[in-house]
Image (cartoon, rainbow, N blue to C red):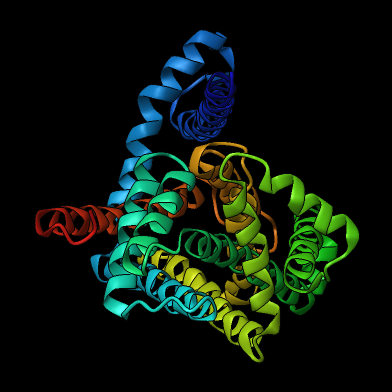
Length: 355
């Protein structure tokens, strides 16, 4: 029953993904075709769709393929930086649980996880693999390894949401003048409150009677002892002086690297990104956070629509085709690093290092 439910959820997410992708592509392609076809308004709906999907892809590809190679390579460097900054943060989380991994081993595991997250269309598969390999490398402390992956994800999201909130204050006039920015901030603040509450309860909630009863109930379930150990392991993070500020600091740096990746791609497409840098500090991390919601596999469709919607605001005014090109190029950069993770996985398998 559970497997059927999971399959149904995935199918629904995939359907939403396809609708969102088809929608944004059709809007952009129709806009491109309308500029080139005479008497556009006289065409039937079917003829407009046919002309849109005949002319539109060529225009989109022309924009994407016109990116400057130097700036494209720079964006790949910044994308790589986000992965390796994430490795530094994860090692801080691992250390609290007494799990020691060298930077090279942690980087290898993270790249492999990134590969599976990308090509399994979701974060669960890669994260499970990350936890499994971390446990295998650290005396099979499964509960602690799983906890580090969950906490790393949680703190990464919380820190980026906090970054977006701070950037909203720096762009207060822009946020208040654009309804779309206000709508995004409502979502971000809701996510910030929810993730912050989870952090507080996980790290600092005392041994109340209700919690002890809950843990006793969990212990009776299959693998319940592992779940209880995960809950207990979370309290170590709240007891470690200086842990949270250091993790948040690295996470803020990661958020900046995400923005710089988009800025580099924008320069590569000939956009005046320097003029919009302060607003981009708000928009790019906000898109990443909202795309992390379990709406579509890997946020595909949600991310592309948000880039077009937010970068097309009057505060920036980037045309839809170019905004979509930015999103697709950034996603392609992520896939490039995923392929490196795939190569690392094959190398590890051949040496039996992670099996």
